[in-house]
Image (cartoon, rainbow, N blue to C red; front, side, top):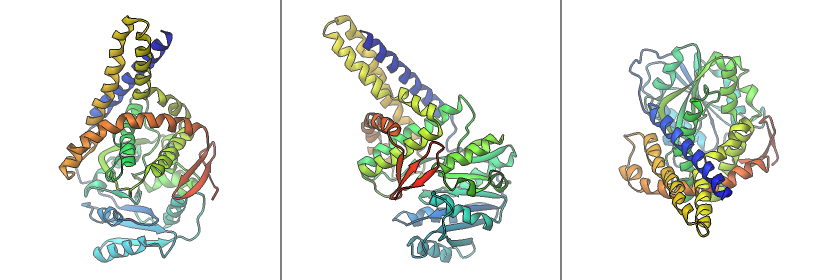
Length: 397
């Protein structure tokens, strides 16, 4: 009977946590746009590139098509002149000849993090008061710059970042990852903001004053860290500036990934969070509703063989388990912009895979959670690294 009570209490904690995340997420004004476009300072976009796929052109092109009133400079950095992504950039230069674009070939890396090393090389070429940093696979709406720069009118805001969603779910494994990102991650971020101000950044799209970047030592100070976006936001927050969330959602268009690739990605993410925020990561297992509600359900059903009254209690974890699935669907739908297409992707099959993969994601995340503690290596772009206790990378292969 004691086991039933233990699992029952944990199931209750996880259900309350789930409702808390849901309420925090639903209150956030996603997709709201600014109405005052008068603040349009000069912006430099920084992008580190490596390789390309069928979506790269569209993702990069979305930055060239920004409806922004101020001057925009775009700086790309690639490590190999023979990289096929160079031709993608050149084709965009030909398509948008009036845009201030520069492609830099960076052959010497300054640290273990190749992406940040290339960004560090671009620092001296920045021509404007504000910088925007974005991953190569991120596609943005035409008004992203207007909205992400607007909060920086306030000098107390040191960095603005955006939520992101996986937009191209081409495999079953990517549906699993989509639950982690499109349902859970952004709602967990908003939940944490109800407890304390945000002290980290989300790296898909970030905007900050160039002066703030230089104040923390620039990208040169981050070249050996795995979680460079976390480090960037955390160091700015520690200097007394606020981290702001832009309501505009950007889209990540990853190439197709199988279970092995998604597992490696999720494990890298989990070990990154464990290093950056060990306490919250350890406690995160308490919010796994499928684990605790399922365990309570099994324990109570087993107990009911010997004690019929406990069968009544089976209803409670069963209800909480279904609540997890019910709340996952509106969380996912809220992250999807209303003008996204095709409609069946967002409201048809989309509705069913969330139901199917939400409990599966929770079950697999138990293994990810344990694996995060038993090992300090990650695989990133085909290269194996060791992650130190301070979050620094050491290349192993």
